[in-house]
Structures are given as structure tokens and as C-alpha cells.
Image 1 (cartoon, rainbow, N blue to C red):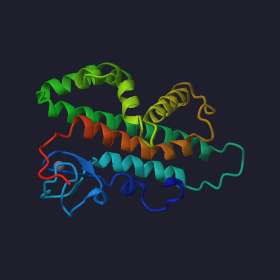
Image 2 (tube, rainbow, N blue to C red):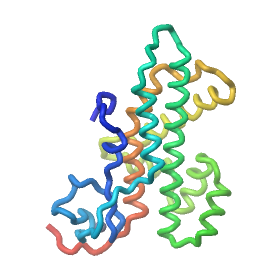
Image 3 (cartoon, helix red, strand yellow):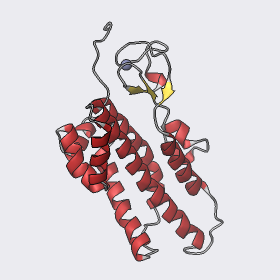
Length: 222
Ligand SMILES: [Zn+2]
């Protein structure tokens, strides 16, 4: 799917994952073998709900709005483009921060850590770098980068590249926000941010299915 050509809501296309009430597996309706049945545990879900929190929808809507807004730019680097580059990079970084926090919260809930402990851990590891380098391996038992490599292996999407791109956006955003370098963000970065939305969402779906969903006995195998 080339999201850049899609005029309808990117958020509804990218985030249409349902969550199974029984095993917490995330899947799309198209993955169902039987209607209303989870493809992972084969149990019938009593309700089918979209999984992602509202702020994830909002951030993707904002990225799309910024990307598709036509500023009638006709000079080399207009005020509009500056705002457009800045807003997309900020929304993109926020999106990963929100997805990461949501995943860590779900994982800690699965481990039945008391709410107070969860809150303290998130406070102690406030920044993304510390969260992935320190908190993630503590909760998962495997390093962040190693996990990205494992999830990438043999698949169609390169999650290692997606996160390396995110790190690049963080660096450029910081140059722009903290040092006022308005040339910091390369011209093609907004487009790349939009193109990385799909792999980023799918990375967090994979993380959820690997480390949050539970394995229940499959009722029947085919
Ligand atoms: Zn299930």
C-alpha cells in the first residue's frame, strides 16, 4: 500500500486491528478464518474492538493533515514548508513515544506489576532511549535491537530500518527545535515519515502479539 496516494483517513487504514478478548492477540478482520473468531486462539470474541488508543489515531491524522496540506509553496523554502517539516517530525516522534509507552504498560500489566511500580518505572525511564535500552530488556529478557532483528528476519518489513529512521528524525527534530536550525530536516523526511507509518504500526502489533498476547490452547487445528 502506498499511503502517499491515499486520500481517505490513513489512521483508519493503518490502525484497523482488532483485539481478541481471550488471548489479546491483535489481528485484522481479513485474517479471520471464521467470522467473529480469533485467528490465534480460535475463540469467539464477544466484542470486536479497535485496539489502538485515541491519541495514536489523532497523531496519524495530524501527520496526514500536515503532509497533505497544500501551502501553495512556490519559493525555495517557505514559512509553510518549515512548519510542515517541523510538525510532521514532531508528530512522528510523538507517535513512536506513545506506541512504546502503550506497549510497555501492556507488558507490565501482563506481568501483573502493581500500578504503582509501573508508574515508577515509567517515571524512572522517562525517555525513549532509556526505555528501550534499559526497561525493555528488563521486561522482555532480550535487548531492543536484537528483538527488532528477530522480528525483521524473514519478513517483508524492515523494523530495524524503521527504528533507525525514527532515531534520525529525533536527531533532526532536536536540531530544529533546540538549535533553531531550520535546514535540519531534509526535504524528503516528511515523505519518509509517512512511508514509515505502516512498518512502525506493524512493529508494535508484532511486539504486542509476541510479548503481550497469551498462548491459549487452540480449540482445533486445521
Ligand atoms: Zn484469541
